Amino acid sequence: MDMKARRDKCLVCLAPASGLHHIIPRSAGGSDDDSNLVPLCDLCHNRIQPEWERWVEFLTERKEVFERLWGNYTMDR
Image (cartoon, rainbow, N blue to C red):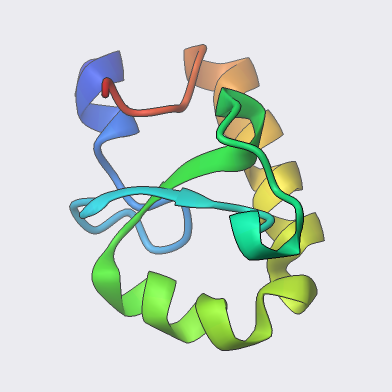
């Protein structure tokens, strides 16, 4: 699997990502910067969104691990 294919996977479950989603929502002051964006599938996004504050640390740490392994883990826009 090449790097682009990895970036097209959900950061949580590795299913195909539906798009980029904010770690900290814009409504809570989150930015559109790549550091605040992660690829997620719809199922994981819907599971995370209502309790996003509980997921910030997990998503941030997981993104850092994936980026150490494969470089920038933000999907091509």
